[in-house]
Length: 350
Image (cartoon, rainbow, N blue to C red):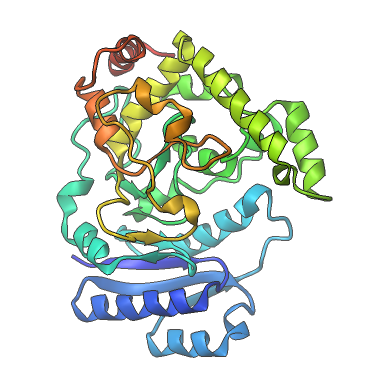
């Protein structure tokens, strides 16, 4: 079995990009990698003659398109177009690794996912019909905000990855998704039609009010609110105060249960198996290990990835697998969550 590689976006972190290309060249020689593609904007490859020549020497298929005038929040519209154009020019329905020039993935891990097709078999179906034909690999997901998943790199069948492309402005005009909004809109969109519980929860469990969103948008043009330590502390305290209340709400637990089941069924989460398995930004380094059997202990500030912000990342499948199999300590919140999980499996959540 061989896979295709799709780099998207700009040429960044040149040394890391060269190392990735060199590793992939070796995997091509071993018959594990088929074609390498680079979906970018017109004129971008020529800005770095050395990399441009290296890609030519490696027969990288370069796709240049017009750069969108509006990037959107987190440059999401540019990300969507680069992926859209890239997937549209790849024939067949092969497994594809979507990545970036400033991401490095350990070649030993790549060998594992390429040669272990069983890791991507969907063995537990969703109650109202599956969305993907095979699981999609992501390096991490955030456990309190459903579908806040890593999008710097992911891996799956081409036709499944095409479902992760959408240009729905409603996620930023009708909802206030807060930090991670571009991640959420990418991964939640394929599941909304068949699982309206997710749609109904988007606005109710936003992490950002319209006023706060407007203030943050305005402040970005002048200065970053995040540079004020007291504001970061206040936001952090409010986040965990709000989380404690939500964990007592049936609707929120229903939302978590649905998302955990979907993650366990349709995704393969793994980025802590090897040392420096994925090199990207600070959050890609697994520094916090969640408790795989005591659910409630994970919803605390000490489990947050950063001092401020409060994101709680899971870098493997262990916790959600235990939840979906009922192999967790029967704490008060866990019992309620397992009840919600059973309702979702029985297709009783609307």
